[in-house]
Image (cartoon, rainbow, N blue to C red; front, top):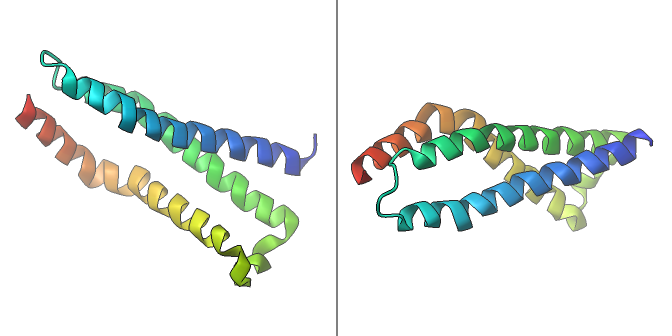
Length: 121
């Protein structure tokens, strides 16, 4: 297989793991933990700790493979075309999640979540 196809495969796989994982945590895991009256207050932290590495890896794979596909296709000029607004949207979403996973979560959000879990527990 050529570089373009491998990049596409990695990009789709990264998006599926990343967005699917976020959906699972938001729609299944958090409501399930909240409904359990006798749940351990640190149950979410343990599950989140296991998933965070998958989310970080999937986000990096998605970003690097997306930028590599742009490089391979010499598609940088598409950012200047108004009809290609979705490229800006994808990069903005990727930047927001990357900032959250690699900067905000380790520095600020993890501590706040820990305090919230201890208060609820």
